[in-house]
Picture 1: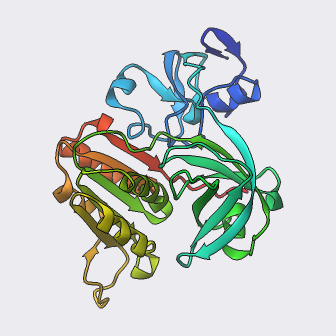
Picture 2: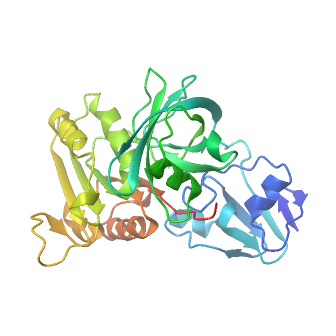
Picture 3: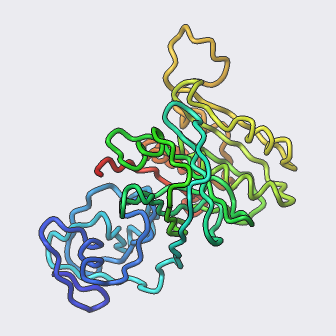
Length: 328
């Protein structure tokens, strides 16, 4: 048994607190449902839970000390009581549209362009639930790859996941004209105001929210120095290089771009940085930096640890952990 703000709730065996709440009709704040965004955080008042994933890189040290947990990753081990701000659920809209175009960016990442039937308000860096008529109610979370557009067009970078029904469909079939549903926005990885330097790290399709934030900021008189590190396996996995160069030329402050390749042999002629992207991060970190990390959890966690070790405050680190879901 669980109590949410004093109201009783039955939790089935192996059910997370969030699953139980949603099943029972409780409008519990949530977004990604996989432990990557902290939208479903709540304070554990009493009892014990079994956490499905480690939450130390999602919740701050202060939140952990105060007993906060992620409802989507917490299975009650005893009767529990939690407190949560049920008004914290972000405003979200469900908008229909159609696939306008697709473009293969790498061997396993496709740009999907959708014309919405009406505009959807979001902040560059946020994500949405994307569904296609060909798969019924099946939907997955993808970050917007551009800032909000006046013509109500949105773009997503979709990486093909082995066994992933939606990502496979997008990467392997011509979907031009197919009906789509975009529900959002979600996530809190948008560019905060400030005057200090920006450190941005992207891995794979995690470039989408980073690119959206940079495109949005480049349209203003932004004078903050930027360092962008882009982690990929091989040179063929790099993409959007022309777009990044156009932003660099438009940026009104120093703009450093460093692609880092992790799967090269000694014989490869790549002249740039090699290894894990987090290994190259420390030389670009200052205590006053504001950091944005988007990509695989291992990359985000390693970069977060490096930032904290160099004195960057936890509240100045914003992340979107691209957690893979392979079930259909």
